[in-house]
Image (cartoon, rainbow, N blue to C red; front, top):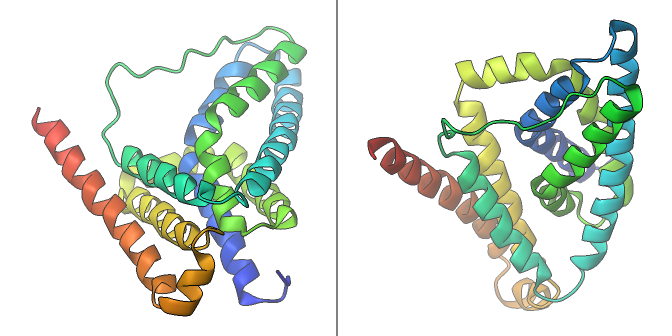
Length: 226
């Protein structure tokens, strides 16, 4: 994918949006892991923790990009994205807590950030792999741009999400769009789609977005009633 092409920058914007929407928990983990460090070590803990987390995430996504070339795995990945998007629209449980141990040492905080980020990054990895369209370079570029936004702008982002819930809905719809696009590019059906059903290149992403938003909102409304 050429860096001057519109498709490249659309994919970059999708990756940034995915990381912002799905990265709130990661930002909270970073804050919790470093809260007991001396003030002069907090910035270093954040920097090296995030650096390690980015490196591991790039490795995970590289594996995901390779695996998604196997027949039917993109379809499975698309279904997982739909589930993640619907879950994103559900009201947060009152009992949900972030059980993160705050370390008093720099290395301990860095380790906590990296381990927690890997454990919590399944949704990001699948979504970014779908948006990147088999380009590791695009993944790295998108993460380099988006991770600083998550780390240093997380409080602002969370306030905006609280004030404008439409941001979360748009983010969930974006996951559905990527899921729909991912499913029809699976190697098992891509050739058939290109030959017999070219309209699916726009119809499937639209359906994916609508399925997540409509199903997610209906389930959320039912959950609030109960």
